[in-house]
Amino acid sequence: MFCCECGAKAQGKFCSNCGHKIAPQTDDWENDVRYEAIIHVPEVRAAIDCCAQGTAKGMSAETFLSICEKVVDSPVSYGALAEISQSMYAKMGMKTGQERVEEIAAPIGRTIARVVCSLAKHGQKIESVQQGDGGCVITAEFPSSIWAMKGELKVSIVQLPTGTLVGAETIIPGQWFDWGKSTAALALLFDDLQTDMGLPPSEKPRLAA
Image (cartoon, rainbow, N blue to C red; front, side, top):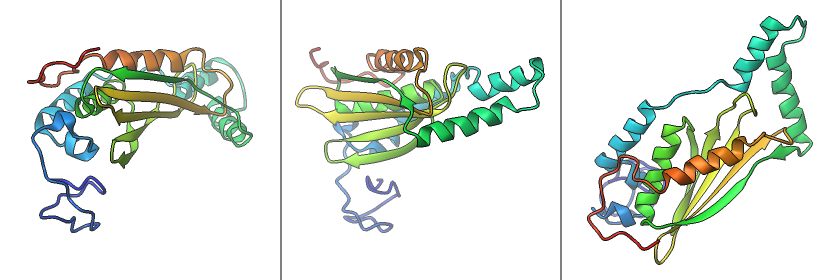
């Protein structure tokens, strides 16, 4: 059993680490809203690990710029210059990104598991999770590429009476354009959310689309 507030292993009615009340453990992980409980289900963990093994990293913006330094004769480090300029422009309020919202015809627990599997598949490391009574918000790293510097990918997952509402947003500070990177990444995420990503099949009837 795990505490949904701090993620520590817990026994009894209250977490010995943070004092949060422990909800009764259930085998019905598909309808569980607790991120920490879901990712510790053995079948879910196995699917996440399997997706992570297939991660293929593309060329980052930093790598691309370091190659340019070897080709173009310049006394200035392009990689260092990009890092400094991104920070400077971010402080000026410059940013880019895209948003997308869809209703997924799957229970919230299974949807959370699919989101985590998708993030693992695309090498988007989870940075933080905000847990709520009806869902959670997962913030992951949006890795840099030749099209854009590093940013964030925020995915909100909310339980609905029938299905789950998922909203995803990319945030890339210090740039005006990302040349379609965000749109493509969100398309991959929502495509993944239509499949079980290696998760065990549901023993219950599928929700109507």
